[in-house]
Length: 204
Image 1 (cartoon, rainbow, N blue to C red):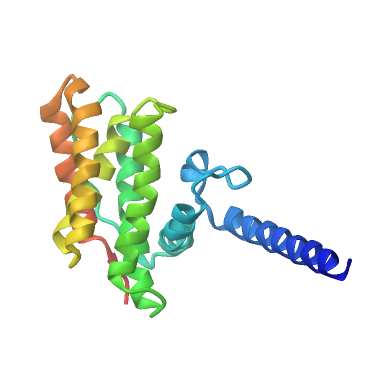
Image 2: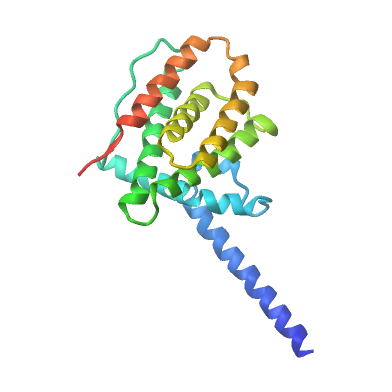
């Protein structure tokens, strides 16, 4: 009887700990990524935990940007139908870069750990877009991911991560790039986001 009570107590404690963790995760998740994450019924919880440094520091970067602590250059003006999304995602590219830079700046995560956390989130995003087809791909959002992933391929010291990032690019090439009506303009957007990402800086 005592053993049974101990097992019930341990199970209860684990459930309480998981609920606490879920609440903490909900507070850390950026709104734009919320649709990719179902905390209560997530079947890939380990991947979610791996992505948390990137997600939490992305959210942390927004108020820093509003206060002028992050410098995000504007992309060149392009002849696009939806310029609002183009500029919005350009800002988000800078916010993503700031998140990656802030991890080492805080001496909490290494640059490689931030690359791995970003990859974990992109793994989920690409899965939902291209494997599960839960969302219609939005060109400037996908261009943002292309630019960031390609930059991380150049920066990472990990051959394994480079290979994983290449796999994500191949998945997008197969499932998205072939359907883009204007590849030239799409590639221009990727180039502009690539430049924004490279030139985003933390002030001071």
